[in-house]
Image (cartoon, rainbow, N blue to C red; front, side):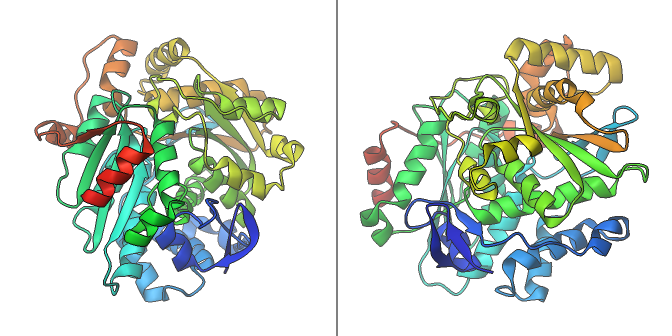
Length: 433
């Protein structure tokens, strides 16, 4: 399996190069030359396989023997060691709970797999690997947890000051050790821009061995396709297809789902749900891409004005917007609607959505009449509601218990370094640290 850059299809790279470098030398994202299809019998009999067995079958097609089967199996077993259950909300509506990992967010799947894969590739290297990651909230804590105390690896987490929840900030700033939290005076898009500039700065890359842990890194994105299969496996037998609703920011989760569909999973279409940062919704509905500075919302992990993985989605569809529209629907929803919907779902189903899941549910409702009778609707609930307790308590108008995992992080001291959003300041810090 070769990988190419979204900026140059003729440039060829190995899986190891794609993982360790994170971003292609020309600033493009790594893409597999093909999405390896799974055997129809395997998909038909998903119920007979454990989650880790499904993950292994998917991963080996992309790794293509660059990691031997025994080591790949060990990586998966130590990464995907928590469940991804579906919760039935109604006869045809289900919630895929992706918050049962150590940091209570879907990013745990990708971050843990990526950390162990990178560690495998650099274990014999004499040079330390420096991981740069921009986060709008959950990525930072998941990466910090996944890479904590990884030998030969330093992690620098860039997050926008005042634009992540208190719980998220506590999780990503209290690890210490090889994890450094950098509080950037700006937006998530500023953090992402700084990381991308670093990778194309030849002066910096000659001095430091750099890689990325955002979903721009292919090893962060690939494991996110695992749970689409795991979700479908759990559906009642009467459902022959599924519609997946994906709360969307940087579009990594949606891209992973598109990979799953191309591997053969019977997905009718996707619903990409955005908040007031509706750049992707506007692109799908109008064909015009107009990136802009992100604004702060209650669903902060989706506060992205320049979604990186759009380049990968365009490649999957050869820039054919009409083909995209056949398989991707999209709508955006405001903070007031997000709040009122959390309350409505709680009162109707006794289930508490987090703000991202609430945005997703609203989008799923909008397109509920587009699917056939034998199709299940599955909403990706990307984080535990306890990570956004102030918002959720406001919505349901009652005091809720803080998750024990978060209670532990709140007892620790925040350690972060504040920097401006100028790349030159970050570069100087990195060189001198």
